[in-house]
Image (cartoon, rainbow, N blue to C red; front, side):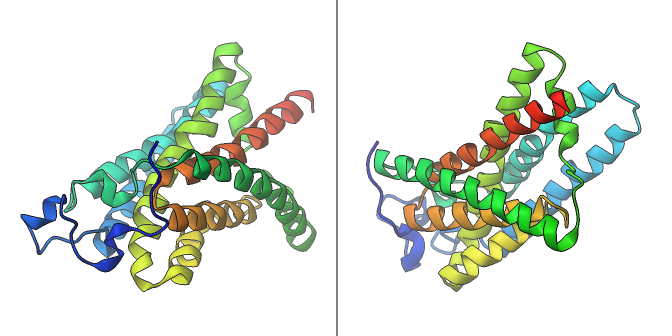
Length: 248
């Protein structure tokens, strides 16, 4: 993979020589508020509204849990595709660009550190708020239907959902907010990301994940290192949850 600069080429506000924007100079070179708003609204409709409908079907807990493990990825990817189709068709403008092996390795390291910090943040949340209810326990139900269910649930939680979330929250939200500076982009997108997970004991974990992936995205200019962070962050968490809920 070729190495990319730590800064977005769009930061100058000028189209590059190879950009299609030379044919449409009035087009934005990076996502903006339109993409943020439309992306989040579509995600809320596809994600939250659909889940409320699934609850009415009286599905088997294992089937319902398996659907939920996939649905964040489904909803975020649909939201991303809709936002991309609005004005800017180039995926590079959303951070879908090649990166270096060095940045991928950095992603692994950051993911491991974030996993440890996440555990400490949740412990602090439980001590302060007294909230011990894990709202994601239902994901464990989807993983206990056999080997295939476990494999599918793990792929959905550890790869599919992180991919969709990185495209939506970093490729669109962090990316768009970078026009206001690094602090606004990283902190602002983290707040949005965490709030979309709800005010519960997942909130502190989402804050840690959001800060880590947004900063890595800002520095690398690509969603792929942040995806590695997210995968490393999610995978052990999910496997530990399945293990303890299975034996508890």
